Length: 189
Image (tube, rainbow, N blue to C red; front, side, top):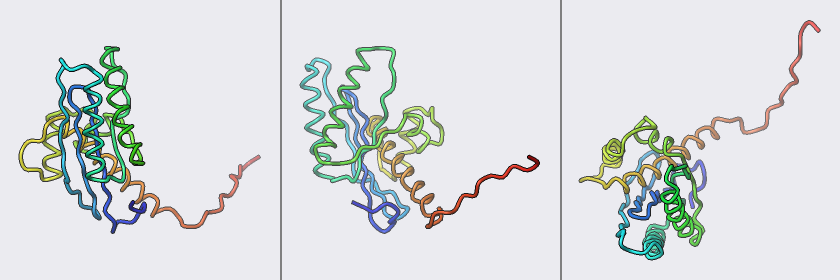
């Protein structure tokens, strides 16, 4: 695993956009300041298929992706509140499967809000799926269209890499030794 702040070592992040009908995944590698697209895909299921079978398919495919790309981390969207309880429950199950696939390989998980993820690639937290797709293609120089769910997953990976790079720059800017804080004096008392 790459050391934080060490720009010479590559870092690979798997982004996941969980869903029971379509789960998107995308792998991005950072080397120095350059982002490299390593792969993406969508795990599709049929509504005629029992929920347990859909979840098994998602787990099996994500576990393969984790084993193949050996990411240093997984990034996905935080839980949000939905108006439809059944949809929220099914999404939560798909998220749980994604978390399990990462945990079984001891891969750390990072979660970001949809607004943070969209802001990281489009610069606007309420961007449309199409805007995310276009920017993912441009940022990662992907030839051909990227399916919406895979684009969202790649955006989640980029969001984490951007956050990690920012945190590293802040850490480098901080003083190396603790500074003495002086008590605030009040004048005129």
